[in-house]
Image (cartoon, rainbow, N blue to C red; front, side):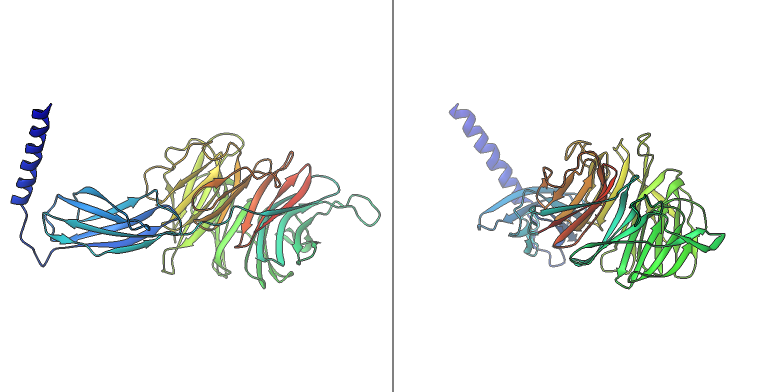
Length: 441
């Protein structure tokens, strides 16, 4: 046994001596540089770049923890530029990183990384229901501020004589104290603009309190100044709008049945190319970093009938399909922060860090066994999803909370959600009534 140990020591010493033999003299023109690419509450992405470094090369990555302790890892570097992924960090802590190569006698800059803090899982919930006959439902909601919230859909009430009123209220507004039922009017038909009808509504987007757009559950969109209607637009093709989204009132999109995507430039609506005949349920966009360009994605499926699905990237003048590997379930919603985190949901909650990543992570029931019909976030450390039977899930940057009891519904579902820093609002239907649930922190 002693002889074996001596043998190992000799071999190790021999390797060390050979390593010393190939140490290169310092080269002033070679360098290693570390740049923070991204950071979450528990992960960091660091870009490593080299100049005039002979590759492959063994380098040592040193991490200094918040306690001052250090740990190192040897990396076999094969490319001039690499992306280092570091996990198992703690939220709201400062770490330091440095890379060095004994062989090349060069060290990188010391990079300081502060992880994001987590957000609170703790919400105080309150629920309201609306409707006195037929089937009422709310399909979308927008938070202007905590004292001005608008939800849209169809709410059926009785008239002044107590009889069922066949004309639905298609909007309801919170003023800080109470909800007020409202009617947004649409043309009886685009060929008959002289008659106005409060058709059921499907979606809302708010650019400011004086620039509000509400879509009919059909092929029209109304524009409001406050709650005063100022314009009514007919779509260039006949389809049912599921969601409207845009960067401004001069750059607006409407998506819906038969894979239809139409765009508005402030003057004209036109249909963009067709890339699927599946129903498009959701659309979302985020700025390309600090540029003025937007990354825009949409999700489509035949949700209640088969598992087919598409993830669509909407470019300036064309559409393209984004890989959905290895998903095999239908999708209903999406939300993302550009090059930080991407979520698609429906029968499961799936995510990527970069859209170019090969595979979507998570299996259908990893996070929840309930369908998630809508997802929105304030940032990657504050993401909320809602869905079947009033299920609410929240990611705080470190973990998911999935067992909220107060928002649960007996036989209904939440179909849409909007979020701000201090308030979350979910809307849908519960036992033939429209339902609104707010969560405050």
